[in-house]
Image (cartoon, rainbow, N blue to C red; front, top):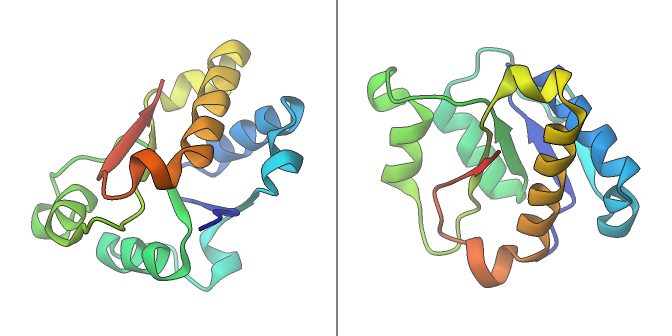
Length: 136
């Protein structure tokens, strides 16, 4: 399985853009043929519920990039959706550990970019069935 598309959660578009530029600078975009997409580009609506977004990503084999969402939305939250629906072949949700820092700290952003590239390269061997991975 080759992951080429990373879908940015609606709440971290600028953060995903910074991460993408770091991946470009480090040569990973070309090496891994990566694309970042936003909801509009893939036919999802702003405010779409977490279960719909997660299922969409699984069906299309997109990695979902988010901020640090919690379980506060009850059964509709991303955290509880993933726990309830994860299988051994599910893709993990990729969570940026510090959204504010990724916008202002180039070294942190590049470290997160390297972690993301490593996750993608080792996805099948190590990370399928994992619910969530944090970039930090």
